[in-house]
Length: 126
Image (cartoon, rainbow, N blue to C red):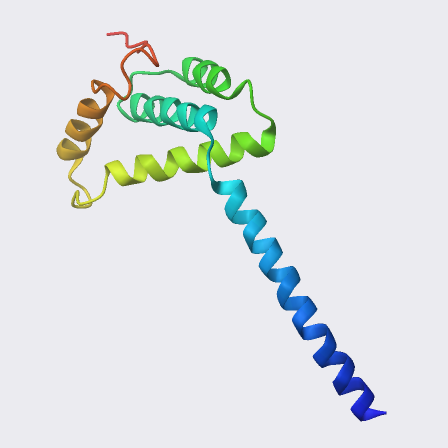
């Protein structure tokens, strides 16, 4: 009886490994972006930069974010938002923690770059 249990476990191990590999491949595919998703992630990154700079109020942020993600289902929107957060995090790479001036400078430069030009309009009010 014990040998039969071990054999069953061995027979299931390759199947479990295959299923796990298939699941991980699906997850990796879900995190890759097509051209439309890439444009949306870039838009969301610009929105995040403008929000961090204080250019957007809550309503403007939500309106712009909803507009950038309106053509995608919730799952796609989550992946796009996660990618945008990754891009945003990459903008901060190499900046010492607590250097607010350098953070603001980097965000302003990105907001004024070709990556954000024409994608998002700032709603900054003095």
